[in-house]
Length: 201
Image (cartoon, rainbow, N blue to C red; front, side, top):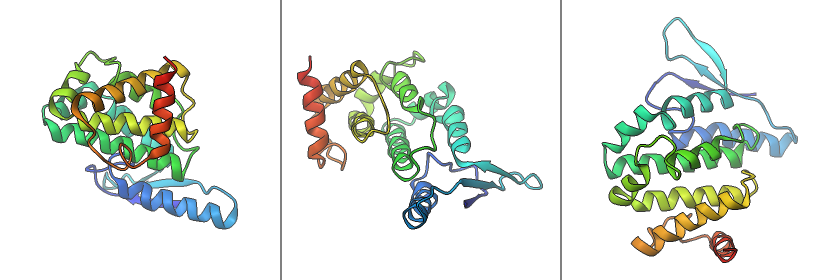
């Protein structure tokens, strides 16, 4: 069992990369040594006198619901301009980090919900326009992370969904040029995957 203490409301499993690096990394190391994926928990000490143990997947999904997919939170982050967009890109990278280090931890529909909220604008917040105007490179990163998650087999998205994300990604790169990150420019296999899905049209 891997346990990480949590005493601050300023970070969560999805919002800070160190969390999956440490808890996820130790879990991955333990699995490599023992052949068994250890259970992971957070020792939640945020409320004095009311400490509780929370399963890591549950803690991540609570953060997803209360912040990342919460329309009030999204509106406030959009008001921050380019830095708010970069924050969402970091959450996507961290979610991917959990997929790599603890593939069974997250609910399978989380990526679909990310896609519906940030690409389909399910909440009617004009999210696509916000990213185009304030930080298109953040959305390039987010779509690249989603596609890499599919490519690695962590998200079993249908063909239409993958094609839509690939088209969104390619459209942003064509319009604004590539904002080169490890996901966007330095991944030849991902570029091949994107090209295949675009050619499928």
